[in-house]
Length: 418
Image (cartoon, rainbow, N blue to C red):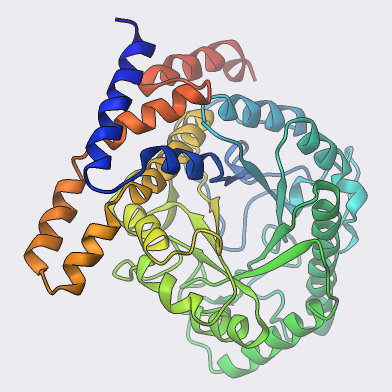
């Protein structure tokens, strides 16, 4: 029996097994085909970008490891992204930071970025059927320091306000060109390393900055705002806390970004989904794997990630949540890290969609706690992996671990020679 025949046979058996529990596997496959990750461009080059401004990362941004083969320019970044995509089933988006503009070697400061600096990305995205999302970049700049949009120095604050306004204009052009809204994420690292006595002042300034930034309404982009517990070197106080952005998003109808590394280790990001969707229109996810802190390890099928995707499905929120990845591991093969993290997120969504939710809800409604718990546990060993293999086969990407050798080949032939 060929590998393809074995995959198809296992899939048919899985379809029958799930059907007995009221789950339509073919319908799940259709939903998965429309599940799009927004891949983070910064995994390719350790968040360096193409500017000629900063010499090193700053503003709470840090990469660890020095694995050989980092992408050094825009062509290598694009080549690595396409190679990673060849191992990831489905169609996906690309999430760009402002520092990844096509500047042609020119020094373009952050308050001078324009849509023209991203036109080649727009063209590239169309060529490869990859829609774009966007981020302002407040870190790794001589004017970033510890405070940007909440800086009491008005000249510095206005510099970052102008930068973020221009990023929204870029996102608008991206969305218009691709016929689908570009999601523009706003995150700033602003905070204090030690005790501050001016919390209200900094938050008033941040709110005023946001009010100025969002004064212009656009039709082809969506804004999302992202909180954090703390940043490296800014451990005592973060201006843009979860409460700050949740309040702002609820009041002004903004999408809120939930980064799985931006909360206390004992917090459940999954638990936030249903609460926040009662008050904000949509959510954006930045999925990574925190180890003790926001350390941006490669996403895997761990319990927090599975619980997050399960909660989205259980809440009926598939059309109100957007899915981005946000890790940058420089300690292992970077393309391999892309593929492992992306496929892990997809597997978590697949398992969530295959959950026998109707039967589970019936047990819960009837007060049958034992039955609910028992089925939840048995569902973990249902043949979801057979469905995953078929999903890969249908999308013409490697089934199982066979992508490992292909990543190794790309390393031997391309990245190791950089």
